[in-house]
Amino acid sequence: MPMLKNGSEVSDVRLDRIQQFDERSRNYPIRATIDPSLDPRSYTWRCDTYLNQGSEGACVGFSMTHELIARPKAITGLDGKFAREQVYWEAQKIDPWEGGAYPDAGTFYEGTSVLAGIKTLKKLGYIDSYRWCFGLDDLVMAVGYRGPVILGVPWYSGMFEPMSCGHLHVTGYVAGGHAILCKGVSVKNKTFTLHNSWGSSWGNGGEALIHWDEMERLLYEGGEACVPEIRTFGPE
Image (cartoon, rainbow, N blue to C red; front, side, top):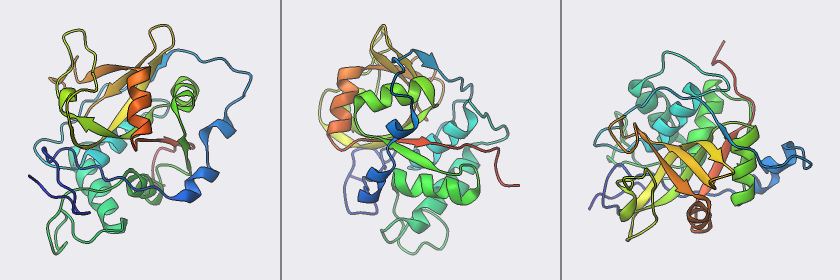
């Protein structure tokens, strides 16, 4: 089984999101920026590009790049090379673990954290700040009003392929950790739309739905949800 930078093993190298939480993040909840009088609303943020990370790690880099490509500020010209080299490799250089997949990394390892990835986006000049969702209600409101959210969640063996109805179900064993973009929420159906980095042939044209209760479980089991708060069109 492939071993990641932090010494953990995964059944599929594409699942190389490593959990990393900084207690200082609790000082930056997304709820503090959303009008408390607002009711949850359904909304989907357009993202027409479906990158494919192939048979390598880099899910953090690809999920971050999908966020940049998506509305509300859609950036053009970004591709898999950008996701891998500019985001993923650079995130590996600032995370707390030795080694990496980048040239001259020393020991070759896949994997990095959402925290290192979002810090890299800020360093690159694509965002000015970021906040966090702490629970299901935060995620519903963030996707409904603020924009796509970058998720880092445990990925179960039953989630590799969505059901024929397009839904993912949290079944089987934990195969690793995955970073993926949450780009839509339906209040009526109580679902989120996930935009994956496994190409447009995966799921329903590269996407899948997941019920709120199953997402709540993933968040409870060490998941995280990061919201770029001030997006820009990139370095000047």
